[in-house]
Figure (cartoon, rainbow over the protein chains, first blue to last red):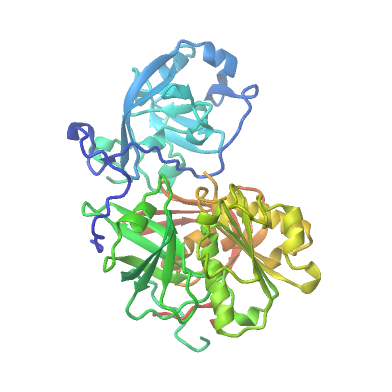
Length: 201
Length: 243
Length: 92
């Protein structure tokens, strides 16, 4: 264990957070750090689409079509693998169940793909059953490009690197395939409650 | 330096704060004692690592603001949403310690043999490595011509103000100016650079340091004036805190 | 977030390669060449991403997992590392 600096605590923490809501190794903050692997993309809305693919494109929505879909407001806790958690974040968007209702599917896994080239993989059952959304509003405002706007994936029960920013679609897969960070050793599943940060955890 | 041990282990060492100077309301200088400090080259930086009691760690790089031969000194600007800078600028006391790794860097460095004339452009806390270069030039009695263009938001934000008062320093204050200010009062643009930077004919060497947007804009401006890209060295700090 | 540059990872690179690396000349698969110090660097996420300043594609990814540093250099054609004594700093 390295040298401890007197009084250092890191990000402003919420010491009063209910410990039952804080996964192991996490601390709660009111900040919302911006962490990226590249420049913020800026796809004009008139060119933005969201697609479900399976080799070829099965279904695609334009921004207008996407915004016309039934949406819901959700309040969830989010947990970043870099150890900060944020409680009671509110988002508005379309449930992945709504999107998948429109396609015939028989996939075990999905790979989310994004404007930046970023990808992340998830089991099919972890993006269905009311567990995942494509969101475009954060705390009542349109989602900031820095935080993934116009739309990002939201899968709050897994580490937040799975909630891919600038998401443009889901590729349906038969077998699990590592996405960007998973390729380098991050956990294929990423359950914060079992502290599955790295492969082998 | 030639002939000295070449490839050493660059490990984390414990540094103790021996002096604290509040440069501006948001900027603080910490002088460090690091037993066995081997000396550094002007322009180099150190990595600072802080570990909390629960094991949480954060690391940041800070330029050394002192010249070779002087004790290592870092000058830190407090960023509003910072993780490390609020601790270093508000909580750290004389006698406190934290881990430091360095000195680091072989690119953004100046040695008298590198010559000049030198054009230094600093935005906000980007002035820190420039002070190391200016002091080293002075300490070695180098005859290289130098000019520092230093962009700050207001006069109260000017770091090392008393020291950076010579005729080789050109200030621009981008947000507000004191009464009677006759200096530049805008963000650096190509016209300003044309008036301040050394002519390309003199074969200048440029160093630009500060927020990324400042660095890119000044570098583009110098290239427009004819500076060769390989005669421009850049060091980008985080986005916030600049003019 | 705005990108930093290779200067910001001088310490990490030294830690991995045991020598000053920011002066190493990187050649991106796009053909652009320059010192690692001038590459775009994105920090703070699960790993370090280094991108070509010209084409913005990824040249290096560094991820530390359990005392191992994974260094992906697939985005580089080559890296030329200076070996001259005068390029190294004085050590401890």
